[in-house]
Length: 417
Image (cartoon, rainbow, N blue to C red):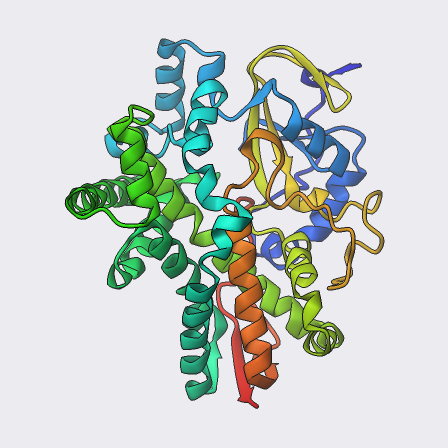
């Protein structure tokens, strides 16, 4: 069993996620990482990056690997760490974002997750199929009238936020603003953060908070059959604090935006780059669930997450001392040739397809059923309503960074049936 702290720094910088070259082709870089004999020590991350499927899966499932440093740090050390990394002096962000369900562990995580879990089961999500279909019809109809669209700006950017906002109980006219706030909050999680990024994140969190306070007041006056009413009832029963209610609602809205927008864009791009697969999907609509799973595997929208060792542990072939930070590179694991046949091939009929795009273990993505339903309905509607979808540019630019993956724009022409 090797000691991870003995892993040597790389002789050359293989992983440079904030470059345009990486954004154009991250998967060749991931292949180089998988070929290394040891995890990759990423200086900007201050931790060890794992890229092989079995290692990433083992770390994600290990109960000793946690999201939050509070599992092993004192309050004084945590405060010092916050100051060192620039995560301090942003009271709203610290209160509602840095300590939400995603960033919690143990008993608190299980309690918060149990409160919202029932709203994200496949059975519960299916109740919203008619609503999702109606909105998809509306978006596709508007796109067909234009003919030439940016798939990201005209469709993907709107649909996930509207759907999750409706389920939570947000008025339709407010959903676009929630996306803006979400983007401003989430961008602060990138490895390279500026002071302007910090100000944007704090301002957006504060405005988001004030909005939710008013929405909660309104829902208390007039309860409805929505997720916000469920959260309010949980607070009244003593299962959630007010801070936890707001942080959970905020997280649900933020998580329901960006990653699904990105995978809708990359999924559409994959179909356009593989016309044989699009034809097969047009001819075999029953393959749509498989196709959506392949979209998540092929270009994982949330490629990278961190964990800390809450205790000294032995996992993925290494002794990992308490407090060690590791990176789980899901996107690299999802193209591991030891697990997937022809991993760099986009294959809509791939089965089984046990990818890691939704994570594993205690932090398995709660919204995976809703995201897949959105995707299945949108792409089915597009293929039924069009006889052709054509890419209008040979060059599609993707976002830089290791934390997200999706096209910035996707100009296409839609030909109606």
